[in-house]
Length: 563
Image 1 (cartoon, one colour):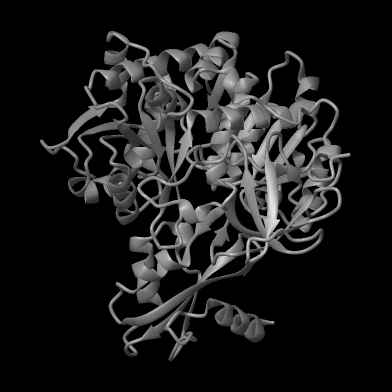
Image 2 (tube, rainbow, N blue to C red):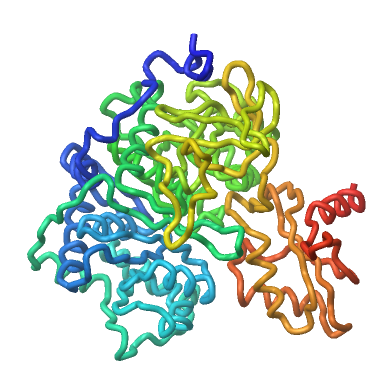
């Protein structure tokens, strides 16, 4: 019996208790193995257009050769701002293949949010889909960006791509006007990068597992997002851990073609980790560029069988609300993975009833490449816990004095493993770790005798909206720039659809400050999911003796008023 790590006794017989990322010399060796093993397998399907692993290999090599020809300094950071389109993975892998560091960016970022990430990361080059170029235009002169690669949604869809681009630009008008023809920034179109890259020499760089592969930005309690340093070793470990955990079911697939629904945005750490898992096993990704279009999403799902379906509670719930969703063919569906936010019992039960496939919930975060804990992949029902630690992961639960707590006692979850970040870029990360090297997650949990963890609360004031982190300090600092707002505070309140919603308390200067004014300012300065959905005007905010806003008091007041 493993008394110190009781969760090890729960592992299925064919799930290893540890993994070894050192079996690869670099991340590109892992990707190269995938391309070699599955060269003729379809790797992605998007709007009916298929690309094989060989296609993606060749496109990523062209991107890499082109990047090397730009004479960027060693260790340069390259930004990637795209939705789930066929060129996303070739570009991301091409950046790594060239020996550079990739920093993925949320395509829905406003200019202000984009400027911070570009400046903090020091990115010299950005690959961006033109739907989002307007945000870049607003701030590019205030960044270190020297080269811009502009892509259209349909750039890797052949003849169909021409039709897609025409509809997006001229019919749906989803490309706001922009002007990036600035002599200070060299602009290249993505098809030209592929064309030039195929005829340029490529020199495989000397890389090691210790080198940084990604600067993956996550919200910070200071109000500014921080770049988690994810090494090649962290990423390889996450790939091996994910593969190990799903083995009890994926071994049943044998040599069949397996389709994984990729509706979660690839810039998000959960989806990125799933792309690693999928490539290791030769899966085909059903790319969904706009999952908010639920009728279109259901139509996409009707066109081919799907075996693995990852999502957040909001996504599952939205699909279940579609009248024709229940008529899809779910006979191939074997794994439904819930992450990013807490899954609800009601949604899990309805999903099982409609699809016949149980929802398996887990927990992860940016700082550990989305790998942490999960329920057993062969479980046949939802249990409301976030499961047990994965292979090579150790978890301790401590109190406010960093002392371990007893079974069933609440405390902060701290994690250690080969997938866990070494810290944040340009930040003192010492306070993020315990003295013995465990990363402080900020999540309050309890553990039972078997090692199963129940998520109770968050130590920090972070709000989780549809699986995305929202940090009150950032929102408050932005909203204080709105004319007529004297003071403000942000809390998260329960929301049936999104898990949590943002509520903004405003101390106004006068009656000229209306909810419409506040909402318009937020929409101009914040990504949609960060915008307050509830606004309440108050004469003052509860504060401590040193002037700190007592958000807990606001939460208590909200619950008392709306109970």
